[in-house]
Amino acid sequence: MRAGLLTEGGYPYVSGDAGLWCDRLVRGLGQHEFDLYVLGRGRRQEEQGLLALPPQVARVRTAPLWTAEGDGGAVAYGRRARRRFTEHYGELAGAVCTTGDGGASGAVADRFANALYGLAELAREEGGLGAALRSDTAVRTLERACHAPGAPRTAREARVADLLTVTGHLERALRPLSLDWYGDDALGAADLCHATSGGPAALPGLLARHFHGVPLLVTEYGVHLRSHYLERGPDAAAPAVRALLAAFHGRLATEIYRRAEILTPGNAHARRWQERCGADRARIRTVYPGMAADGFTEAGESPDRADPDTLVWVGGVEPAKDLISLLHAFAEVRREEPGARLRIVGGPSGPDGPAYLGHCRALAAQLFPDEAEGAHAVGSNPVSFEEIGGPEAPTLPDAYASGAVVVLSSVVEGFPTGLIEAMFCGRATVSTDVGAVVEVIGGTGLVVPPRNPRALADACVALLRDPERRARLGAAARARALELFTVEQNVAAFHGIYLEIVSHCPVRRDLLDASGAPLPFAAPAESHVPARWPATPTWALSTTEPAR
Image (cartoon, rainbow, N blue to C red; front, side, top):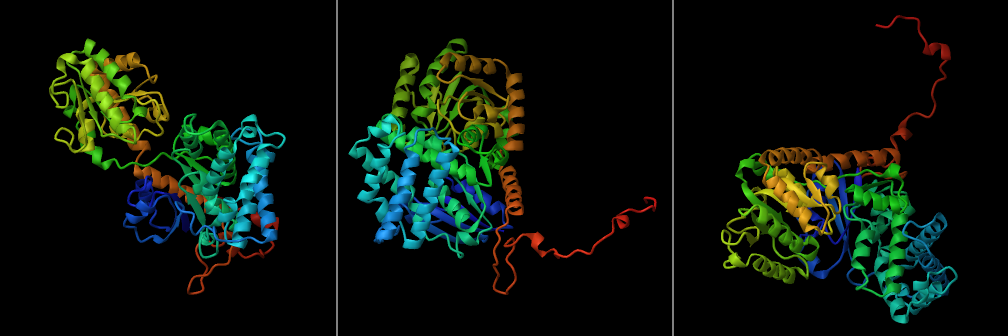
């Protein structure tokens, strides 16, 4: 089978966010051939180069979408093409400006889809959309749609600066429409397209389906629409900008979910988002991210290594992890268990990480003033701040293995990979009820409300005082993690899904290899069965001979 794998700013770059998961998938499906289609998101990332790729990767094509060059920006349209662009872009803007939520009604969804594919066909015929999408015509068309009957009040209040911002965002999001990836020598030759995220990254798969009938598989371990909502908060953009961009991404998500043959969310939380945007429940298969369990085997099989009085937190330090609540909770723990310790293992993450880490250090010194001296050293203060690679936590498994209870205190969490690592290590856990935590834990750990230090403290104390319960929960957690969250489980699930897709939705084309033989899966197997069957009397189908 020939699969076109669509990624955005990740695999196969060395610094790609989704690189590890995609690399494991490609290597695990060695019986298939992969063409990688990468939407680049930065010059620095591309300069760092690619990972060492396995032999089943036939080629890599990259579209540098971090620059507008090469996206058809220099194409000058004639009068007829300009009229077609205005018509299609007007329809798309009209669908965006129609009152409704992310799960658009059928009529609005069809209007958006027709406009999207009309723009794609125009780009294919004329050489690109870049200049048109950045033109004054695009801005004026969007402005008319914002003032049309039925437009929401926030859209009607859009100022010129807001219209320019939205137009610029739409131009960047629609750049995949201008790519030269949709011929018979590219995605048109694939047996299926596998988009590793939703949103604009799945656009090439939509177009391969539109132009060539190539079935589309969409995997979302983080729902693109949800990420957009989180990034475009009240402090990030004006109300009109937020409303229009949310509507655009909601319409796009609806179209992707309608057209994908199969959707594979990484958890039930992502699945609910997809269903809310119109995805057919029958075409959804939850596939948990695969993680390598080998490195945690020793810790998981040696539960006695843990300090029975130590709580461990592991991760990237940032405000969403809510270490402030954890520190206040630990102060309550110390009142009931004076010998308890808390190890915070991890460096700052994100732009706010360094300042937040400094604030947490200061709070720890304030909460434990009698022990503040030497607060950075292990063994003096009951709270220690460490990083992986230090003398007390040389490796990630060592960090988890050092404590009797692993704590997760986040207020925002997608799929909690750190929690699964703790489960691989056979550790009892206390977690806040956010994201997919309850789904991952499945009854093998304690879960408390977020931003509730008292509840977090009570759960930690309960496990610190009950070693038998800790051991029982840790063993159950390790068994659950090994059953559901390994690389092998993930690869096996996608192997079955790939075969399911091509068996139900074969691409009907006449493609031959160099020797003139048909390419595998280029035509349905049923087409090779002789069309004429000899007539068989119905009496010949029965027999009186006894069964043997």
